[in-house]
Amino acid sequence: MNQDLFQAPDYYNLDDLLTDEHKMVRDAARDWVKRSVSPIIEEAAQRAEFPNEILGGLAEVGAFGPYIPEEYGGAGLDQISYGLIMQELERGDSGVRSTASVQSSLVMYPIFKYGSEEQKQKYLPKLASGEMIGCFGLTEPNHGSNPGGMETKIKDMGDHYLLNGAKMWISNAPFADIAIVWAKNEEGRIHGLVVERGMEGFTTPETHNKWSLRTSATGELIFDNVKIPKENILPEKSGLGAPLGCLDSARFGIAWGAIGAAMDCYDTALRYSKERVQFGKPIAAFQLQQKKLAEMITEITKAQLLAWRLGALKNEGRATSAQISMAKRNNVDMALKIAREARQILGAMGITGDYSIMRHMMNLESVITYEGTHDIHLLITGMDITGENAFK
Image (cartoon, rainbow, N blue to C red; front, side, top):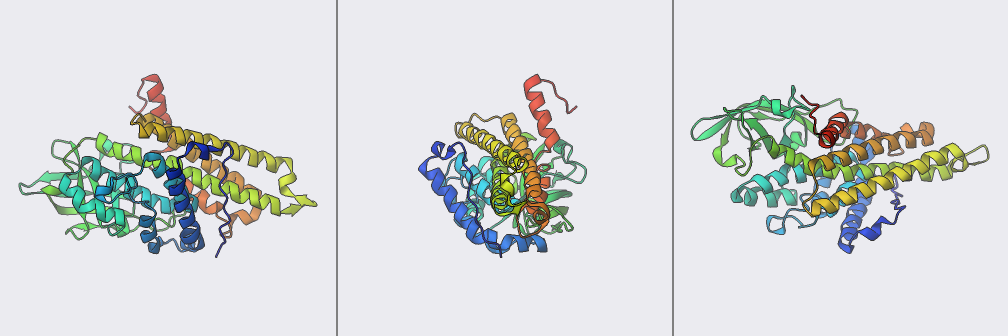
């Protein structure tokens, strides 16, 4: 069992930009990760299992729908608080953050934004408490970066809909109680619907043999003539903009979460460099190691400022999808590069489970791809600044 000695870097005194509530929320999540995630996460990653015992703790620290109003079971917090929670969870492990991110931004958010009052009352309190876990079905075997090409269909049968199709690479799928699924109707319009475990023809086979996100439960969603009650359709928004709105919220959380992974790699490498002696002195005294560490803290600080400003814009309702894309792309790329450099500082020890770096590196290889690949987010920025669409 590894001892968690993490000390968060704050080179530009960014805590001064946070409210007392922000710091209280962050510190509660940080303490919980040290207590409940760090001692078990390496073994869970080696076993490629999600540690189900942490679900209650995630709910207790407000990781499930922290910005959802209290009347629906959420904590009623702002977007920076949400980001800080995601940062601390991913500092522990990207798979843990993914579980909370999906629950919050891809399940609770669409129900809150697009659902009926009855749906909100039925699902949100149970999702906030962790009594119910959800997943989000958008990506398909033949449609990843092009979700508008989805082949999953719903057919109006009069008193219900008939759902057929398949989704893949779905976080939380193997144990989710409900799935927010996006499908086309007979006119080709995309709609969101709530599919409940136990509905006949609905199965969730687990995806195995992953080298990345090994502590996240990943699976498929298979729909074989599943009867969907009409009251399970999300009534307040349809079209591709509906699921993309959910992804904006999730990508915002990822932009913060990646900082947590980067901070953990930096902190581990810094501590190791001071303790590891070669040629008669700590390797921290050598110029090349100082270069690595100095560049790490610089990039982390830049990412912290980017995320904080984005959070402030989001609180004001002014954050654009393109701005969120930029932060997701930049911060995940930053974290992955820092993980690779930190691994080099640790030398051979960096590949072992005695340290978190290799686990973070493998996880970030998924994070840089899911919810918009590194290249797709680059093109989103390109389209935003030029007005030219390079996707078609």
